[in-house]
Length: 237
Image 1 (spheres, one colour):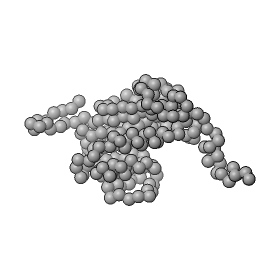
Image 2 (cartoon, one colour):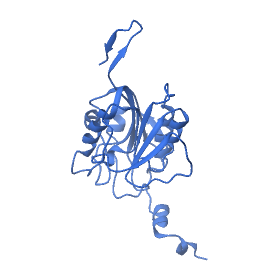
Image 3 (cartoon, helix red, strand yellow):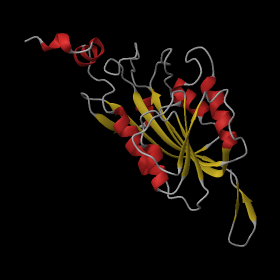
């Protein structure tokens, strides 16, 4: 029996028309890395912002760690679970009303910013990063993951080299950075920044089995004023 005729064409395309290496497993790396960097919430009213939530479960992990999480996505989000600490909003980060009162102590910006606006046509990613920065409290952190490579990307997603990545994070202090790429075969391996930012990425179409780039994952810190043990205010830089 020819079972192939019962398989939807999009599935057939994913299974048959693929190249090695490809993006298979990228979310496992990004989500696991991000989840491992979420700190315990020190206060019951600590707010977190999860951008482009999609099918990710990272907001649920943050909620389990005591964060009150606001999830933002262009699409209506329907999850197979409920948590009292998670709320959902639909909208475009560039135009929707956003709390710009230094509210969020944690921002989960995972595989999101590269899609904002019109990749290849505008600077929606930089505009969005500035809006998010304003919405963050002093001494807050952002978990940022982005595609990296030597080519700028396509009309669906940007890809960042060393210069554009520096510009993207220019208002923040980089506390930590990790990079992964597929060097031999189809397995994600830790690499250095130069290797990731100069990776020979291929981004034709939207099929993840025909696309490949490196992964950049950064913990960013928004500086601010902190009160030391003597009660004196120090300004971080």
